[in-house]
Length: 215
Image (cartoon, rainbow, N blue to C red):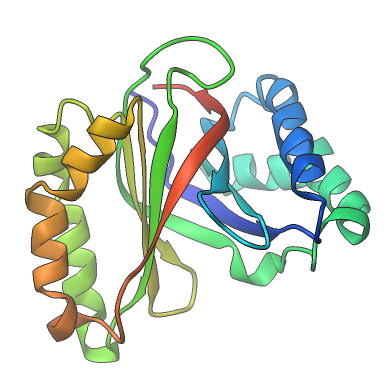
C-alpha cells in the first residue's frame, strides 16, 4: 500500500476565457508525473460549475524529499512560467503544503483518469481549542471510510502551521460520490461542525481531468 504523508493542494483560478487552456495544461502534466517515482498520487481536477473556472492539483508523497523533487521538477516550473497568461494569480507556495493525516487509496483502473470521474474537496477551519479534536475525528474516521466500498480514494489533510484542514475524495461514479456524502463519516462531520469549526465547511464538487494512482 502506498500512502503518502506529505502532500500539496494547489488551487488554480483561470483568467476569463482561459479555462480550456488550464485544463489542457493539467492533462499534459499526467505524462510527466508518471515518471516521478515518489509522486504516489496526483490528481488534476476542475471545480464543477465554477465561474471563473477553477481547478486544483492534489498530490501526495512518501517524504519531504519526494515532495521537494516534484516541486523542483517540470510541472511546477511550467505552471509558474505560464501562470501570467492563464491564471488570475499564481499559486502561493507557502499556502499549499499539507500533511496527510489519514488516507484510503485504491486503484480502480488503468488509464489517464485511473478509473475516476468525480470527487469532492472540503476545506474547514478548526476552532483553536478544537484543533486536536478535529485531527482525532479525521484519523478516527478511516476505518469507516475503508468500509465504503465505492469510495476509491479519501484523504484527510492539514495545512502546515494553521488551523485549516481538508478532506479530498475521489470516486468512479456520481452515484458513489452521492452515497459517500450521505454515509456515516460525512453526516457525523456535519453534525459536529458547530462545535468544532469556525464557520461552515466549504464543499466543492470536482471533475477528474487526470490522475496517477499508486495504491
